Length: 412
Image 1 (tube, rainbow, N blue to C red):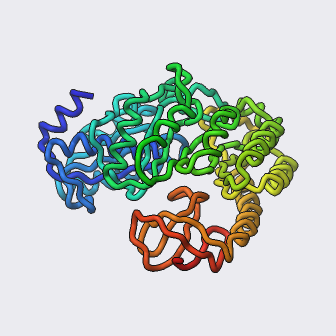
Image 2: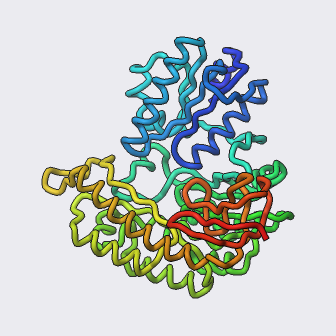
Image 3: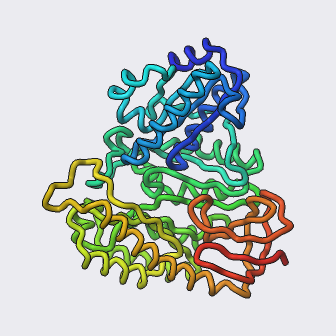
């Protein structure tokens, strides 16, 4: 890490352009890295042609993400030919494929893998009015479809003091929504004697008006203590982001998820009993090896029963060489199944959104025309549209219209 930064500083960069790909955890790494460089009098610019250092924080989770990262590298190389800018490539793709790609792309000047990414005392804030706090890295789960532990390693909690300092730092910069992220936020502390509920309680004790939104909660790690804390808290939004992946117990067993369909039903029921207005988001994988049309019908029935507020659907990407000629599902079928599930969820989301017409909701403004309420995470869920707002302020909006994703209203 020190050697890479020394080489960077020796190149004397003055203007930095940032491309941050993949998940919010990457965004946090990008902000830390940019902050480190900015301490050396490097300014962030808005166009790559203005930069003398182009930083690409890559994603290598699945094949499509890796392809996108490679495309961005070659785009940067074209800019380098015109401007002479240096190129820094960091992140997950580097960790996963460094030996394969460094020799093939000599135009890249600096490589930095995830295990050497910094946690800076200060930090660039690039997502106002919300800010992400990465509370851990790595993962102890060994899901059959996931390669993250192979290049991220085992779960490693960020020490509690650092998390609280980062929360305070973001709030001092005007952030109004703190979003905790990790491969499994609910697993926090299990490697060091702590626990996630205790961490959230300490963050919520910081003075000021702000929201706390936990992301990435593994269904079997959602404890009674966590549910009770969220139910009693004015700051922690009752938003449960649970990546369940599927409803077929047979497929969940093959995925090595450690729970079955009934376990999901039980945890959702428990949460709703304690927090009637809780909202739920999940992610699903369709096209997993051996999935049948009957599994898709079961999945549609399941999401109609559970009524998630929002769902993200992904087609299976064979990262662990699980597919064989016998159980391979072709791309066309995968895409058709994804479309089928998304259409089913659109109808559910629309029915839920219609129940808010005529009601008032408290929102956090993201611009002068758009905001989010407690049910909406930034960038992945819908928005509420109204006029006359200022970014980073809380408003009460009366909802007048709804569609499958967004709400529309006016300030009251």
